Image (cartoon, rainbow, N blue to C red; front, side):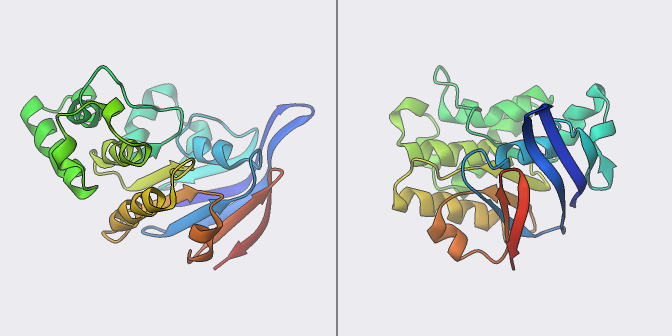
Length: 219
């Protein structure tokens, strides 16, 4: 499902984000990406979504070389990806339901279909009762679960989550992880970056980065 073949990313002569990274993630796997801030976790996730391109090596998603993907092909790639990135915030001038409907409306789904699927997605993360509310009225953990609902409303094959529990209390973090695990349980491939030791200790597989290098893997 996801394969990195000797991937490096260099922003400048002294700015190496990733160095000679190789690994494979099978369809339906749930894998955590660990490492300190600046280790290259976000860059790695963004490469899968074609937000960044490798300086060398290959990133393959479903056998497709992301580095060779033309601009016109990027929206089609992302329709199969559920993206949960910290910079992709909810829109505070729209309701929770409208936020979750947005990816479907952008790709041309009828409004009635978009609303039905958005309500189903909110139900899966336990927030259907907040559908008509405003994002600013939600807690941090609830906002993150709305982000997950928005990410999965397109029924993606892969979920990419960049520090989805950052700055959340333990109870909220556990609910966010439980929501992600629920999607994994029905066959969605998940790659989740985290520095939460409690979550990582319970993980079946962890890819560990440090200073842009693959250090170790726990499986």
